[in-house]
Image (tube, rainbow, N blue to C red; front, side):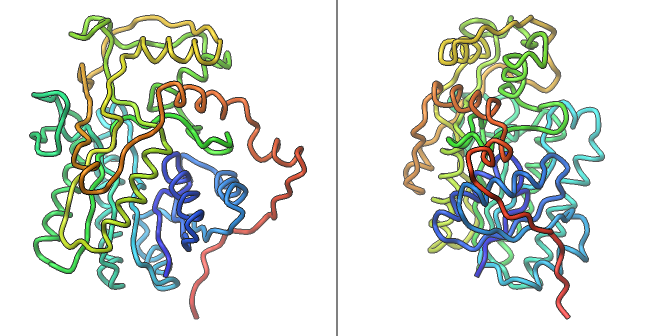
Amino acid sequence: MAILVTGGAGYIGSQICVDLLALNKDVVIVDDLSNSTLEVVENIELISGKKVHFFQVDLKNKIELDLVFRTFRFSEVIHLAGVKSVNDSIQNPLEYYSQNILGTIILLDCMKKNNVKKIIFSSSATVYGVPEKIPIAESAKTEPINPYGLTKLAIEQLLNALANANKDLSIVILRYFNPIGAHESGLIGEKPLSKPNNLMPFITQVAMKEREYLNVFGDDYDTKDGTGVRDYIHIADLSSGHIMALNYLDDFKGCETFNLGSGTGFSVLEIINAFQRVNGIHLNYRVVEKRKGDVAVCIADIAKAALLLNWRPNKTIEDMCKDSWKIQQMQSVALAKEEGIIIEKRKYELWIPQ
C-alpha cells in the first residue's frame, strides 16, 4: 500500500517524501505546482535514488483526485496542500477558504469513498492567535486572528467531528511553528515561486543580492530586542515528527493534536545575527511598520510530542541558518548533472484506469 502526500512537491512535503522513501515506503504525490516545480520531484528522486508517483492535481478537482484514489490503495494520507500566507489571507480570504477548506473536504470525501482511515493534517500555530501563556501547550485556547489561522482551525474542528462520528478513524493534527532550513544536500528546501511567506527566504534573497534589504516588521514588541520572537524548527526535525506520527497512528484511534516546534524562541534580530555569524555574510535590513495579524511571541510547548510520539528536535539554529544558505548556493539539478549524476526525464501524467 502507498502513502499519499498532498502538497508533496512543496517545501515541507518534499522533505517528508525523501524521509518516507528512505524507509522504503511507496509514495504518491499530489500537488498543483502552484508554488513548486517538477524539478523538486526530480530532486526527491535524485536524493532518494527511488521513484515517486506524481500527479499534478488541484484538490478541488474531485474527478481527478478520485482517479488517483482509484489507481492506488492508500494506507495513510499526509495532507499538506494549501495556501499559507497570513498577510495574503487577510487580503484574499475567499481564496484561503476555498483552497484550504474546500480542498480538504473533497480530499476527506475521497478518503471515505475509498476506505482510507488514517490521516496526518498539517496545521499551524496560528490557530492559537495571541497566546495567553508562553510556551503554548496544545490545550491553550484557539482564537486565530487572521483568515489563514481560521481555515486551519476550521479543518481541525472538522477532523475532530469526523473522529467522534467514526471510531475507526485515526487522525493526527500537527501544529507547525516556524519551519526553516533545508535538506542537507541543498537540493530541496524553501524556494517559493512568488513572494516568500516566511523570514528565511527573505534573508537568503538579501544575502544573494536579489533584494536590497530585509524588512523587519516592528521593533517595539515586548520582547528582548523589540522584534518578534518565534519558535523556529529545522525542516528535518519537522519531517521526523511526521514519521513518528505515522508510527503513532498504527495503534491509535481518534483524533490527537501535537505541537511541532523547537521549544525555543528566537527574535528576528537573533536570526539575522545567527545567519551572519554562521555564513560570514552581512545582511542589510530596515525596520518597518508592524504587520496586521502578527503576534509578539510564539513558542511551542513540545512536551506532549516528546511523551506520546517519542519525538524531539535535534537541529540547532546554526544548522537552520547554514542549510538555508546552502540551498541558495546550489544549482539543484543542473549542478548535480555537472557532477556526473544523470536523472531520467519522465512525463508525469494522470493514468486513468480502464
